Length: 313
Length: 313
Image 1 (tube, rainbow over the protein chains, first blue to last red):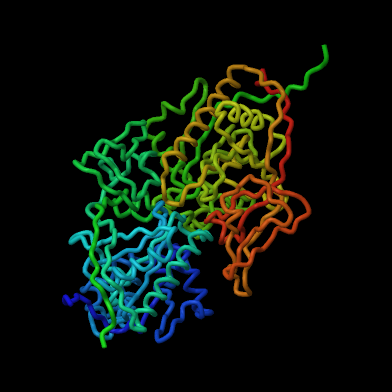
Image 2 (cartoon, chains in turn blue, cyan; image 1 turned 180 degrees about the vertical axis):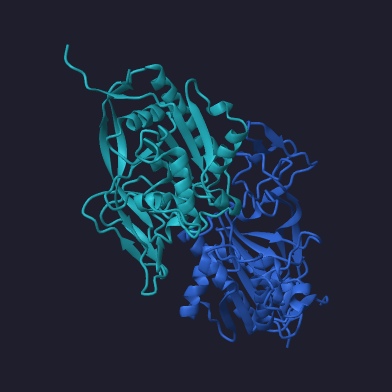
């Protein structure tokens, strides 16, 4: 027999589901509030699954954040700096969440955190990974994709050295984002709600199976890797001077080829993509990213190899 | 010859286009800002067309309002009460706008005000009227509908004794709302932007033609008349317990028949419509109306008769 490369991980007994990291993304807010009242649907044998509203003040005001974006606030500086009542609300909150579910990078940290998000972009269901070498997470997304077929679910990999950001879920050993759209901020659509709920169900099933000792064989995972942000054309005052082109709008995950139109100026001129090879845009025309100077993000498609995994004895 | 019933109106020389009455409804904000820089597109012979941002602080923050909804603030009490620096921002602003474009109900008021709005609902292009007997406006919407065909444009009539509200545009002699969707708050979509722009063009063409002395013959206008607001099912704490049903979502202007599902509870139960005859829902699942306890508004379809009109000599 040839030797087999199997990655072993401890059982995943502490799992959290975050909603309301952005207070106006309603599917996660409503699912988490529902599960806080009755968690039967998210309980699995041998695990504790904790539904948690991360930014309750933003949820109450139905706004993305109060002082600063919570999903960018889990930096080493914020988490290690001294407590101060004058800190921005979300920085205080990041410190609290890090104490409850971390500390980030420590053995005590939660095993898995799912963070539930909505986007105004036509992205469908998307799982967001922060590492190409977390074989536990790669196996989980592979399991989810198989389980929900023929429905589909893209995988976005953000491990870009400059574009990766300090997410709420990054407190966990295995952080995983779930982004479902299109859904306007402040709106709850039943189709988006049910898609998110279904993916969570399969994710929790995977963890339960893993904990019982099932070995998952090697697999390949098709991912879209973040390469670059593209801003709207702007004038000297920072005001946008063009819109996402109608041929690009709603075409998340579809190839954008050199010469294809990206933007349409207010006087009707098309601005073409001038890269040298096809790319896959996503987060196209996301409401929350106007202030982040981002019209969409460019990705490239890659196949990641996941080793076999099983729980460590 | 039989006598002819022709309504005569003075020339419409003072016209305004309001954007940003809700600061996160981007088509109107961007069109008005564009026209403030270069108004050639909205100028017509013998008229002054003034593009105007009504709620600049809300636009700057990309939020619906600062203290209170500006589009509900033009009440007689607000407009006639004493000035006070402690008044809510939008009440102060309503008083200023009433001075600039009114006073409401006076001979000095602007002739026509277009107020540009977006909705997250799948309403397409919608013209909103506040009176079934303003023959000038009825002729205008008839002209617009003919001009944009085969594109379509619904007409919503809100003259319900309790549900009509005190709009920004109500300062004018002929107030007309333009509501285009679906578009998430804080997002600018090129298709919505161009639809709104095109309708404004035809509306201004109509006024110019009227001013030159063209007589418009009698016509009939198909309108949807506001009858009733329907709220989401809620628990004792006011939290919603159901979503708009997937069979109703995005079906603005389509008939809802007795027994058709309206809502879907979080545990999957359908809540049917229990009225006695078909109605036409609109503003279905509009983001801004959750706080107004409104899941959609019920309308009935009516034909309004417009008399012939021409300008008074």
